[in-house]
Length: 322
Image (tube, rainbow, N blue to C red):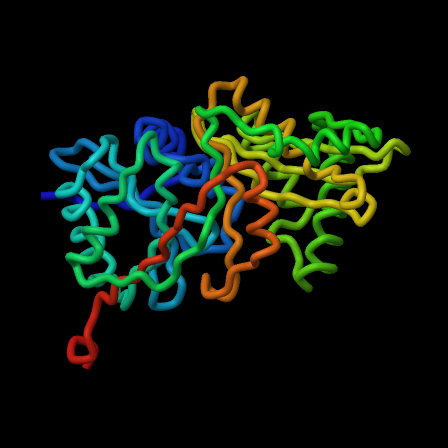
């Protein structure tokens, strides 16, 4: 039998080492990322052990009568240190359901990792949740470029134009550069979506410190030296890079500055031996609306569309609650 054991902060380093062993483990599963939330969430992450040895881990937090993996992350889900672990995944999810049901949770929600973030496509969670009575409640469409193929000249056309207009790109790592990027991002989201960044500047700088070399800031500057576009790039695991934030000023849009930033970041990822370069989701309103211009922009580099599944499993019935 699997025995769940609550995660304790003293085990953070051991947790992160376990994440590195798992084919589906990513930067967002690690405690160095999740820890930046502090006491914002009621953590209920667990280890699942057999004969005293860890079999799986599950990052999660309690939100009222729900357990979510993970509310402070783009994705979560159980991690098992092998590929194709279909029956083990079913056993792990069954044990998690029993654990959280016994703790009074009515519902288990999982934001699963897109398949391209694994060392190879591997989605046993979807099958296990279906077998357990779970449902897919949301699907977000991501844009992902495969880097093990030749890229076409047209994929680089806009970036070449930006170079001719005098735009320069460099990786910058000063607090001032992050402040410039955050101001660009805030302005972009306000103008185009009436929204604000998920992270304020203080949180962004905290993540810069926590994530170290797994993150980098790429800044494009206009001929005047003003920041015109920026990309906050994450390396989720060896072989997978992801544009967590993209932003450009109006001048940057005219100069195609963001196109040059992305092109340089893709070339960097290729030189690092990466397999995929991910742009994240282009869907809104719970995944039911496609932001077609955004998806079109992200598709310019020859990427395909990959789905991220958000699933839910009702743990109790009305009869059980009475």
